[in-house]
Each structure stands twice: as structure tokens, then as C-alpha cells.
Length: 487
Image (cartoon, rainbow, N blue to C red; front, side, top):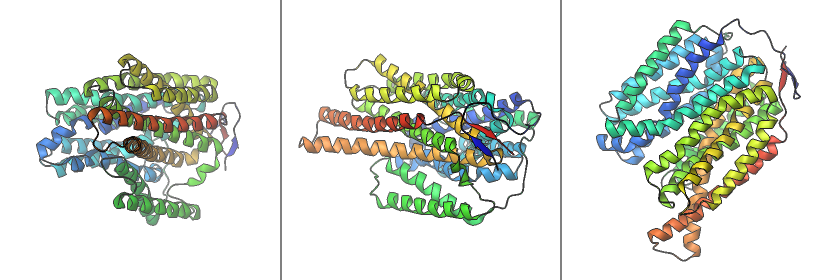
């Protein structure tokens, strides 16, 4: 059992493997980069894919929704994989699956084969991301862990930031298949590099796979992710019978899953990590920020094009600097975290987040483009100040034997909170639109009236984000630098 403290000071840890972490992290970061890049690279290409295969948007959307669904259902059992198999085995399996999925997608003759390729990619991604963080926790001492996690933040934010831009350029000049041809050599290079230099990092045990836990986890996390994702798209809402059914199945399954984990001697996902206060605080902070960030990234493009009347290209360029800045700031925040701890970053970061989200209420038609760019950039800088310190400080407090479980839980709930945030903010925006039209007795709105309604609904959504940011400020005040002594 670990002896926990929450004050300052370096952590006392068990001896770490005598391994040069630089080539190991280079391998894992390269794999994570292409995996995360593929999450957003298809967004711009969906229309071209719909045209080529003659499928409706609701069908094409499964290329994105299915990817998220597979990740949300497989990450929870990544803790079992990381205890059962070596680092080398997991990496080679993950990158082989991802590469195979990329190959299938690029040469797919029909839509169903393309979807199969995407889901195969997602299986590799679901293994890769927790593996990367778990290796960092295993080979990097606490006093340098912030800098390493900062590099993860750079990859995680830089890849999706450039994804739509790269996708737009490729689709504009080639076919959508070149999106996969572009990724394929990078994926192959990462795979061969890993086969050459990667060795095993953590101890391998033989935990028993509890089948019932696996089934409950799949239905639980899968149902919640799909339910909230579906509620945030198109005409669906939380009252839609299909959405409600998935959410009900998901939450009931999660309750049963949690109860079963407490009864098992070797749980599939050890939820006892919630006993560690800094882990719990860090997790809630990460979830609040993920909800706000995902939602703002979804609501703002709709608002910019529908009310501010910016073109799609202009909207993409406005969003790009913030994503790039977030990635660039993550390593800097990591080094500051190592030196000063979480509070000097989390408290000002959450305050800046609250202030900048509040200013979005005054983002109205006619606002200069440069001002929206500045808003977006400051928003993403504040996210960099919160995400990495909260995540790293929380994981630092749990004992080494629980690293796989803490990593799996945090990554899973990040996916879930992103889906919840997107659905919540879209629902608030749409309800605000309807309320505006109803209060002004507008039955057949003109384009100008629709823009006004969208402005009103978006401002309601931004207010919701402001309240979440205020909650994050309160939580940040209770965070202390984690220290742990493993026995």
C-alpha cells in the first residue's frame, strides 16, 4: 500500500528501469501523433466521401463517431493489456493495427470497407494513447515528468490543430484517399523504428480477464459515449428514444461495472484510484476543461459561419493559431510545473479561462476577425495551463502499481467528457435559438432573424461554459503538489 501525501517536495519512488527514455518516447510520440491526427483529418473530407460512395451524411458520420466509440470502449480495458503484455508487444500490435487500418481505408472499394479500416485504426489508437502515458509514468522521475507530459500535450493538440488544414489542402488538390496515403509512410516508419529500439518497460503479470467486467465496461462506456455523441448531432436530442436508450443502458452498465470492480480481487479497472484526492481533483478539472474546450471548438465554428458570416476557410484559419499555440505552450507549461508545481499554473489558468469564455458573450456580428483570433488563442493557452498540470499532478499521487488503471480511467473519462460537453453545449445553443424565436413570435424567420437567434443561443452556450470555468477555479484552489511514497 502506498503512503500518500499532498504537500510539496519530490516524490520518493521505487527504482526505475535503467533505460534511455529519449528513443522510447520518440517512438511512442510518433505513433501517437499519426493516431491522433487521424481523428480529425477526415472531418473536411466527409462531403467528398459521401459523393464518391453515394452515402448520406448520417452514414458518413460513422467514420468519425465509430472512431470515437471504439476508443471510448477499448481504453477502459487498456489497464489489463498493459499488465498482461510487454511494452514492445503492445506498441507493435497497436501500430500494426493502425497501419493495417490505414491501408484498408486508402484502398477501400466500398464504404463498408472504409468504415472497417477506420475502426481498425481506432483499435490501434485506443492502445497507443494509454501506453504512451503509462510509459512516461514508469520511466520518467516525478521531478521531470511535467516536461515529458508537456511533449504529450504538444502532440495531442498539434495533431488535431493541423488535421483540418492538411485535410483541406489534400482534398482540394487530390482525392480523399491521399489522406491515408499521407499517413501510411509515417505510420510504417514509426512501426519499424519501434521494432528496432523499443524494449519492455513495465513488469508483466498474468491478471485474469473478467469477462463480465469487460461486457459491462463495453456497454457502459460505449453507451454513454455514443448516446452523448448522438445527442449533439443533427436533429437528435436527449429525448430521442434511441439516444435515451443508449444513455440508460450506458449508465446502468457503469453502475454495475463499478460495483463489480469493488468486489473483485484483481479488477479490470481499479476504481480505488479515486481514493487519492489529487487524482480525483485533477480528473474533475481535466473533465471540466475538456467539456469546455470540445464544446467551444464545436459551437464557435457554427456561430462564426452562421452569425458572424465568416467563410469555412476563414473559420478554419481563425481556429488554427489557437491549436498551434496550445501545442507550443504545453512543453513550456510542463517545465514550469516541474519547477513550481501545479498551483501557479492552475489558479491563473482557470481564471483566464473563465474571463475569456465570458468575453465570448460579447462576440457579436461585426466584430473584427483579429479579435476573434486573439480570443481563441487566449482560450487555448489557458487550456494548456490547466490540462497538463492537472493530469500530471493527479497521476503523480497514485502508486506505481495503479498507473495503468489511473491512466485508463483518465483517458476514458476525457473521451466521455468531450462527448458530454459537445452534446450539452449544442443542446443549450439550440434551446436558446428556439427560445429566441418563440419569445419574439417568429414563425417563419428570415436569414437575419436566424442569425440573431443563433447569436442568442450561442451566448447561452458561452454562459454555460463560463459557469463550468468558475467551478474549475474553485477546484484549483484545493489542488496541492502531489508526493507519494511507494512501498
